Structures are given as structure tokens and as C-alpha cells.
Amino acid sequence: MISRNPLLQNESSFDLLFCEVVTREAFSIYYNSHFSEDPIFNHVFFSDSYLEDTNYSTSKTRIQFEDIVERTERLDVPASLYLERIWKNSNVLGEDAIDFGFMLIEQMHVLKKNLAPTTLPSDSKIEVSGTKDIAAWNQAFVRSFGIPDSWIPELKNRLSSIVNDRRSYLLVALEEGQDYASGCSLLVIEPSAYMGAYCVGTIPERRSHGVARSLMAGAEQLALQNKCDTILLQTLASDGVAPMYFKMGYETAFERDVFQVRA
Image 1 (cartoon, rainbow, N blue to C red):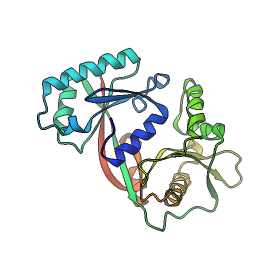
Image 2 (cartoon, rainbow, N blue to C red):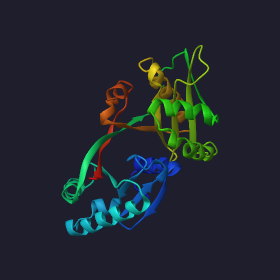
Image 3 (cartoon, rainbow, N blue to C red):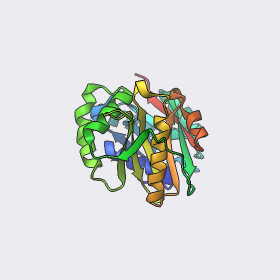
Image 4 (cartoon, rainbow, N blue to C red):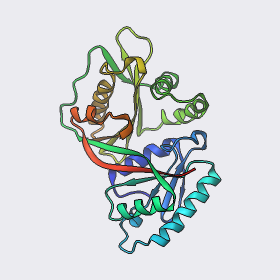
């Protein structure tokens, strides 16, 4: 079930690098039981057609929710729901989710920037480059996001495939005088004119030193080299980093509510 929205297509391509998928007529479940406590790597999308259906039915939606809960319990992952605020049925489906027993746990801003021949200026003291060094990228990712040790074997397994995926790039940021990465990001091209920047992280002691900006400058340059004219990224409202990206010329493409069934 592929969305007609190119930004959602890009996000789906990123999800498939880390997740398995169960596809039903009305929805798809992206999941990874190795990351079972995480609602980002375990979530459900309703199909575009369901979200735009003029004959939307609350009673039918309840049946879909019951199916989602049953299947996610079987997979031993959280029943989390992504719902963008761009669809005809977004409001009513969100209300029905809450009535069913979901609760709003997070909000996500999906940002985009239409690229011009000139990109963000790079910092001469921070070198951003592509890498196939899984250990170096993984170390920066784990430290940047506080990833639990239990995730590391699965991350290594997934990254071994990602480094050979022609649509994907691993970036690291190396500061002058350091022999370890201060930050990382993962880039995905899909469809051909769109690049998504994911996992943009900075290790705690190097935050507010321009690392994220340098990573985005490197991503923009790589996007132009690949003839992409749009770059996008996800930010969580709870992180409060969207204003930083607005200063870089990014704007909100759409907002998304993240729901999860009450335990």
C-alpha cells in the first residue's frame, strides 16, 4: 500500500529499511519486534483511500482498530497510529481513535525545503561525509539518541543492508581534532526528486556547536548531486527543534498526531 503523497512515499522507504510490514486493505503495520518499546519503529498507517473515503464509517473504523490491536499484540509491538492532519477524515478518525482507547502521545512535524543551486553554508571545522563504517555511524547514533544496548545487534544487522542500498546514504560529522563522529544522519531518496534526512543526531556534549546544521548542509549538497529538488525531515514536538530548522529555510509540510492504545 503505497501513498500517492511523495513525502509519505519517502517516509515509507525509510521505514522499510528498519521494519517489516503487514499490509491490510485499510491499513499497514510497520514493525520491528527488536525495537518493541518504540512507537516510531512500530506504527500503523491507514491507506489514503480510507482517509479520503466519503463513506467513512465509525463502526467500520472500530473493527479496523480491533484488528490493529489483535495483530500488534500477536507481533508483540505497541499499537501506535500515525495520523496526518491532511486528510478529509483526519479529525473524525482521531476522535474515533480516542473513543476506542487510543491516547495522543506525541506530535510530529514533517518539514521540507525546496532546494536551490545554493545550499546551507558548511562549517570548515566540521567535515561531513558519507560512510560505510557501520560501527562509527552506529556509535554516533546510539549516543545521540540514547539507544538501549538491546537494540545494537539489530541495528548492525539492518545497517549492513542499508550501506548497500543505492537509495540510502549514511553521513557522519567529524569535528576538527576529533577521531570520532559528533553526529550522524541517514538519507533516503524516494521518489527520485525527494531526499529524506532521518536520524539526524548530535552526541550530547557537542550539541549547540553547529553539528546538525553541518549535517543538513551535507545532505542538501548530496541531494543536489542526485538531482533531488526537495528535502524533508521529521521532528518531534517534544524535542522542540523545529525552530532551528525553520532558520535553515525549512517549512512545515504537514503535522502528524501519534496515538497509542492505553496499556
